[in-house]
Figure 1 (tube, rainbow, N blue to C red):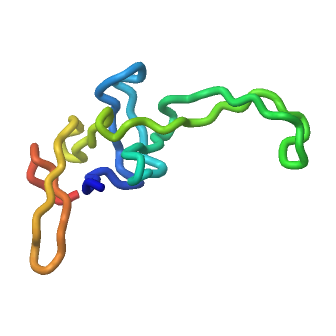
Figure 2 (figure 1 turned 180 degrees about the vertical axis):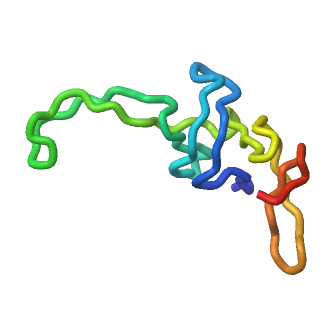
Length: 104
């Protein structure tokens, strides 16, 4: 399993695929599948039957997962996409932006 540099709560931009250019916040990361769910991106329709939870049923819109390789972190300083590096500061590992060299 590889070390993922994208975490929940990061603001990312889709760089490949049908939703290229879309931005959103990472809701959840699935490390074993190398996928993430991004808020408002890759929406799919799911048909649901009536149940106690949703008595009416119908069509529900929800986010589907997207491949980690298709998203890139947005640098908070420059507001552009950037690669992420990991370095040791003191006795802790920290993530930093390769464009602005700023700790994330």
